[in-house]
Length: 133
Image 1 (cartoon, rainbow, N blue to C red):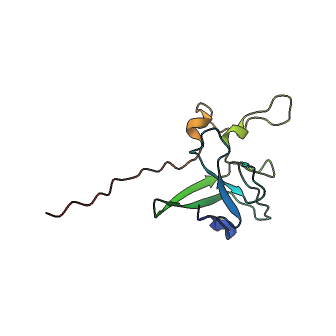
Image 2: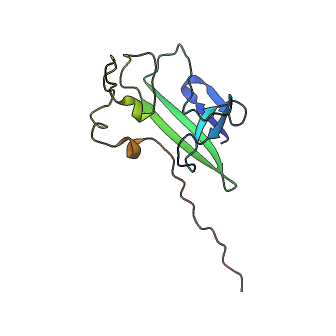
Image 3: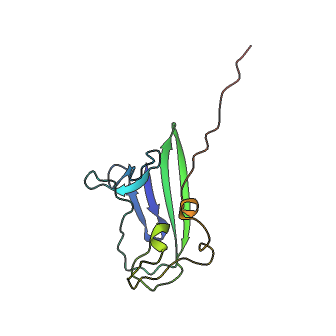
């Protein structure tokens, strides 16, 4: 991972300085950006700001096979009912015996979190050069 930036907050987190790529899931091919503290792979980072956002963009740059892959996600914040937001779709469900109701929008209500979670899938092209004759 090269870096993660949020232009609306003028924030850039450098890979191997502020954040690191780790594998918190059983599928060890699935890497995410984690804060660089300790060795445990904890999904997500917490960014505290006084700025009120309704939209923001997360841009993550990865070094893949000698090239730079850019993953850009545009987020639209549906409400301001709580003091925190998350892109972790599993956290959008209601929690039993708590005051936290479902945070899913109608669009996401019938989708499975595993298929709807924002992620980057690398598609590598075969760039073989023709052999000169």
